[in-house]
Image (cartoon, rainbow, N blue to C red; front, side):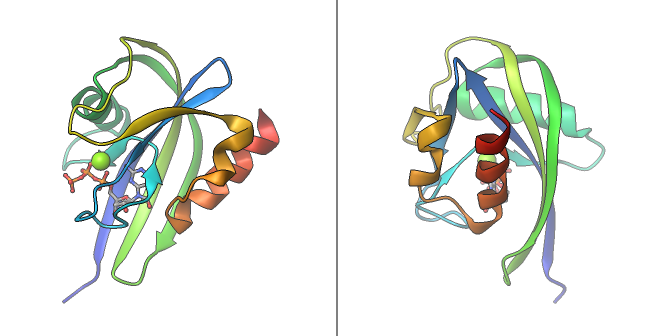
Length: 131
Ligand SMILES: Nc1nc2c([nH]c(=O)n2[C@@H]2O[C@H](COP(=O)(O)OP(=O)(O)OP(=O)(O)O)[C@@H](O)[C@H]2O)c(=O)[nH]1
Ligand SMILES: [Mg+2]
């Protein structure tokens, strides 16, 4: 069977130099690790639409605008992901985990202390270099 290949809209939610992260549940791919909220882009959907939809579903915010930050292709062996990462600094609502996932704000300086999926290490490095 061909390897699963997924396109993912990922939101780095920033407010006052803090970033909102959530924890993937144990049964998910890369379970137990921290992530930036987001999810798979559905057929016929734009990345921006997917981002806005996923951030509403997962953390209950309304995104007003977002900026493309970086794209990462990563092969986990069991799955190939293309992460389309956007900075989200214009939104309304207070983010909270709607799916029972632990969530928290973490400062950009402390971001590297959290356990993230391997693909995210580049995101953390770029955030710490640029902010
Ligand atoms: N949301 C998100 N997914 C990430 C990140 N880093 C990373 O490698 N991924 C990978 O991207 C893939 C898709 O993300 P997802 O599981 O959130 O997709 P989804 O919300 O549509 O989930 P579902 O399959 O439970 O409906 C997963 O394989 C996940 O391991 C990240 O920072 N945020
Ligand atoms: Mg998700």
